Length: 528
Image 1 (tube, one colour):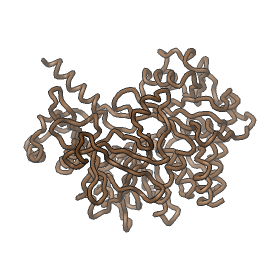
Image 2 (tube, one colour):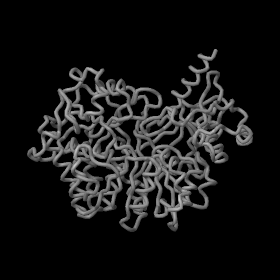
Image 3 (tube, one colour):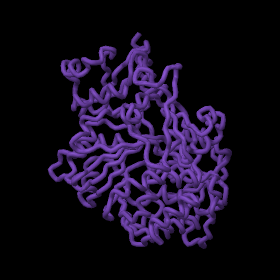
Image 4 (spheres, one colour):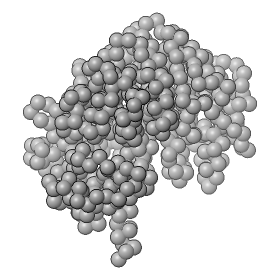
């Protein structure tokens, strides 16, 4: 089977992650998959696999889950320590016809309890480490069974004890039935559970299949995104069907990352914006760990132009580019744009891109106040295409409130230029009176002050714009340099400096702005 044939099949029949490994093995059984860590569920498997071995492991795990009692249509919550085996287990659940519910290991036990109850007595697939954190939850009442992927625990079924279970025939769920459920970032409270189907997952591959077509050679793709995220489905599917060697990364420490890149020399890196910011220091490493990179890609959040510029200049590849895709869990990739080595530093970070080619999402901006959307009167950003998630599990009214016919309201505000570029200014809930765009301020100031490792502008207790700053190595802020850098933004209040480790973040490392604003208000109240 050719990769293009498999891709066309997915576009027709949908993307079933339980079938993907064996489909990829049919394309090329020898495509290598390398890990920077050991698999918890299969510690003997090692860190170097072929796609054929990977597919066999998924089939084995599916047999074990079936032996544990998992059946078609059953919801299986996967909440475990961050590990590449999460995606393998999700594929195994799908292979026996179960509905995968991916929960980030970064979620606290109370939130996990709420989400488990929302999906109504699911199977919980976890490991001993995470199960030990859930002792305050009445698991016997809110789950149908508990399965551990690693470690033995009382009142739980251990997959290790089911090795050698008879293999079972894969179960293919209907193309428009719930297939994989992921959750939103939770920046505004308890995360929403986003329902993806085989159809919506397959459609989301369209624009990204074209992006990967820029790579003419079968070079390594490094993937450093949360294993629980809907983006992992697309990233793994695309790389494996294109027969690209895959480097699946969990570790984010720059020293570890440098060693992996120097050893495997990836041509394509997919990573979180905040991870790329953390790795900026590697651009000065004389060993040049980014020298081999042809394409940098990030799809989770807007990224600062200065970061893109540093990364691109650290590449030694001709025509290296940074491709940014704007989207969200509910809609997938919506718009995108490419940045290049000699112009990225001058880019307007609020211009998140243009509509992608035929078959991809459509974008519109609708008025918020009766005035035509513009830079001064930004409107609501909405998306329409068949890749939009079909529901919020257990919160249908909340989902319906965001949808008008085929159009989905993203919660972001912005405008489109006369050339069609979408400018995203802020999340609606993060807008501050008198501030055009907090994100724009952050882009500009960060580009002027390299000593800042993070800057987040949030609304203060009196509706003022408060810049919360973190510095490299938590060094004291030079107030004179700060005043010079913010001269164009007189609406900013005095800066508040905190250690970067204290920034509240989501599972995809986004700063939880509302939580940060609440912290400032509480601290002010305590001082009063």
